[in-house]
Length: 92
Image (cartoon, rainbow, N blue to C red; front, side, top):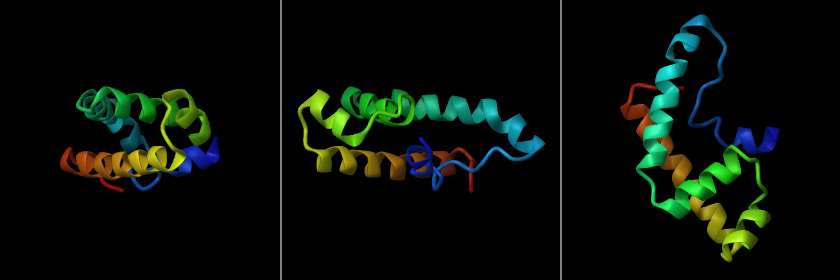
């Protein structure tokens, strides 16, 4: 699980101070907004990987796409999430 969460470290700062706690609800809202803007398959892949901690191979098999395609989608989504969060005022 640590490996999966480490993939998101470049997008979301660690939750380490009281100020971070105050911004936590706004961060959740921003991530939900980002997810709702995605096409269905991309949203499902993102949630399967980072919420349900599914492996790349499990996701690829279930949706009948290659592992490299899943990795590519996740890479692009993390990049878009980082940009989205930056525009919302969340920076590392």
